[in-house]
Structures are given as C-alpha cells and as structure tokens.
Length: 265
Ligand code: 1HE
Image: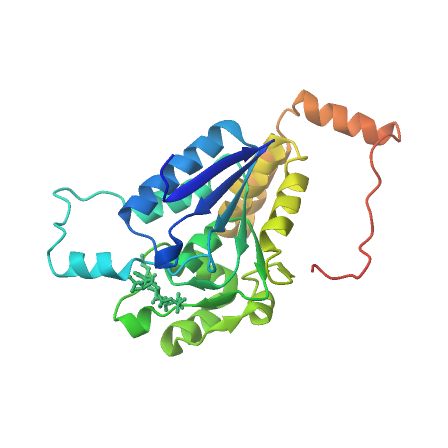
C-alpha cells in the first residue's frame, strides 16, 4: 500500500489514513489512486472503515500546486473523457458495501470536506474547522460537494460558506450536521473507532441497506421512496436476521440503553 495513504486492519475495522502531512494531506492524483486501492481493500476484508488524517489536519483539499500545473498545461489533459477520479473514489466510499466513519481534526476544507461528507458518520475534535475556500482560489467544488455537502448543510449554508469563505468551527459544524459528535482535541480517531466497532456489530446486510437505500430514497418521490423501502425491507430475511429476531423474542438480546445525557456528544 502506498505511503500516501496508510492502511491497517484492526479486527473487522479498516483504518485508512491520509498520509501527506507536510502538504496538509492535500489531495493530488497519486493520493486519489492510493485512496482507491485502500478503499477497495477495505471493501474486501473489513466490515467498517475509519478514514482519518495523519498530522495536524484531516485534509487541505485539492492539491493547488497540481491544479496550477494542470491549468497551465504542465500536466496534459487526458486524451479521453473519463469519469472524474474524485467522483469515482468518493462514490466507492459513499455507495460501496461497507460504512465509513470519518475522524476529523484541524483543516477539513474544500475537497477535504467533500471527502468527509462521502463518509456515513463523522466525528470531529474541537480543533476541526470546515470551509469551502474555492471562491478565494478562483475555482469551484469538484469532488461531489454540490451534491453531498449541499444535502448535508442545505443550500443556504453552503452558499454562505462558498461566497464568503467563512470557516465553521467544530460546534458550528455540529449544528450544521457536518459532524454528529465532537470530542476533546486528539480524541476524534478513538471515538470514530469506537463507533465503527459498534456499527460492525450490525449485520452486513442491514449496513448495506442503510448506506445504499437511504441516500437513494432521499432522491426519490414519496411513492417511489416507499416502493424502494418495501423492496428492501420485505426481502427474504437472511439466517443471521432470523437468529437476531429469535434472540429478542426469547428475551436473550442486549436491551436498548436510553441515552444518559440526551445528546450525541
Ligand atoms: C498545500 C495545500 C493545498 C497546504 N495544496 N499544497 N484548499 C485550500 O485552499 C487550503 C489551502 N491550505 C491552507 O489554507 C493551509 O495550508 C491550512 C489552513 C490547511 C494549514 O495551514 P498551515 O499553516 O498549517 O500550513 P501551510 O504553511 O499553509 O502549508 C504547509 C505546506 O502545505 C506548504 O507547502 P511547503 O512546501 O511550502 O511547506 C503548503 O503549500 C502546503 N499546502 N495546503 C497544495 N491545498 C476537486 S475540487 C476541490 C477544490 C478545493 O479543494 S479548493 C480548496 C483548496
């Protein structure tokens, strides 16, 4: 596995780390290739994956030096039109077979925020800040942000973030659903691993439906959404589901625990 992206398997959980801290984990084509390889490996051997950044930041977004080289013709454009490599890899994360949990700290900006929103659960520590500085750089989001970030924060907030370049701190990120959990500094990865362990206890089939059916239903009309829900919830139940249902009926399942604080933190 490339040095640009670290990979480790801890039980059922794959740990995937952006590993270019000297450039604040900015994403160039080589990082995308390494990320694709890590994500595909996690699809094969893990039940859940955790995405994080080495160093003091999650990710500073698009590699602006590479973008400049491309803009000035130093990097030749591809001879054929192909799917955008960020779209392809971020969709492998968002619509693949296993859930992803992102652990965020420091800069989560531009393409870094686009990557973070491809994950299904996001945890930030108090150092995390979120921004879309594309306006300042004379470019536009290109890693799926118009679709994913806009759905998470809504048009009003995304317009503000893009037009003004204003940075959101961890608490504002929490309010805007960019993260669901905020931890003290340095603890986002531990919390993400804890959550991933919990998610790994679900059946793979249910996890697949949660991450693949929910976002598609969001794109459908009321009627088509209910239809797709029925197609999925009325499927033949796998033996694992039957065993879990029986466990509950026989009074052997772990009881649900009411939250202590009522919050998600
Ligand atoms: C980079 C990049 C980068 C840092 N591309 N090299 N993204 C941005 O507009 C964010 C640009 N980065 C920053 O604003 C700051 O670097 C940070 C706030 C993230 C971190 O600040 P700091 O003080 O810790 O680091 P630094 O001194 O600014 O940068 C350290 C090195 O990383 C330096 O390189 P060096 O060789 O001079 O040491 C920087 O040049 C390098 N570096 N960020 C390339 N982004 C598909 S469309 C997506 C569109 C976008 O993502 S737009 C947002 C781009």
